Image 1: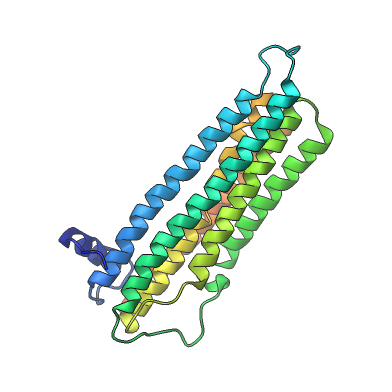
Image 2: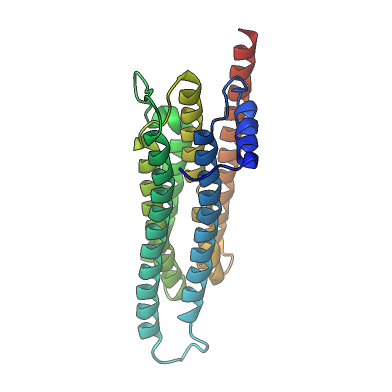
Length: 268
């Protein structure tokens, strides 16, 4: 396992205290797992940002300077090929980040004298929660329906923008599925009750981080909205705003439940 610095142990202690686990000792194993997750989340935030910028460049590169420009169809075909390569790169990059986190977890688990586990393995309902899973599914489904509808009823640049959005959406969905699968299936790394609770909370936070559909909200900005704010794109804005509000309500509800659970634990 990588050498753990004192600052990382202190961060682990603060992380435990903030989640009502002040009685759990911040071991180097936990500090190393938290440290690699912090670094991976930074990279996981940069990677979609680069993907969005590259998608915007691909979209703009295939737009004609003048309506009568020749070779417009050829430019679009090459742009879609490049975008497909970008999608594959996004999924590969997210997979490599998950592999990095998993490798540190495996190293930590290999050093445990014994392994604790759950009597019943927590499923997606417990880890991610039904409201967040429903919001994630509805966000992707709603975005796909809007993009497919635009592809079938609109023409010209608006239709090309819908194709760009659909390809990007497929890539983001695949990357999210890969990450969620890792979070839900990777082995438990714990040797007692305290570290088992910490492992569960870490899993919950990983799942909620992955389930944030921020890239889905951003994809229309780099393509669809370029065609003008008509009634169709107003529908996109309403869809994004409503899903953001829904996420805010779910987050507030989860925060209140966690606070009530901590107070109940303290009272006992």
